[in-house]
Image 1 (cartoon, rainbow, N blue to C red):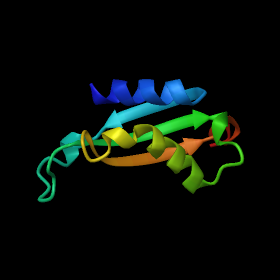
Image 2 (cartoon, rainbow, N blue to C red):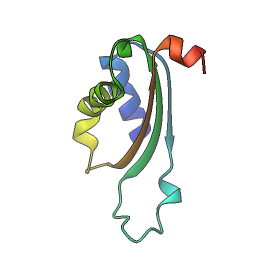
Image 3 (cartoon, one colour):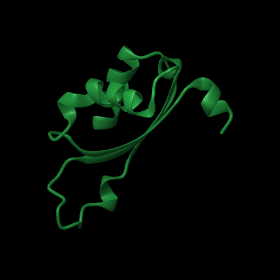
Image 4 (cartoon, rainbow, N blue to C red):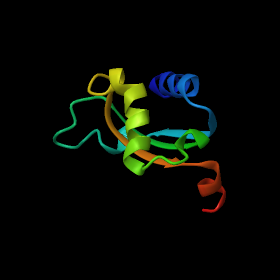
Length: 89
């Protein structure tokens, strides 16, 4: 399953405190431009994001899952937090 592959990849590269991955593909199946691939919504909490901009955080994740983009993943929504940010939501 794609969620487990992605979860394992990210956990092997970053010190993850909390991670949620939701597959929202079923919400997009009837869209005119849907040509396959998963739609994922990810919430990732890691202190590896300390002192990183939002763009840098997303680049970190995209560099890890890059091999899946356009092959098994069509779209990703990322929410990235440090532990302090997550605890203060």
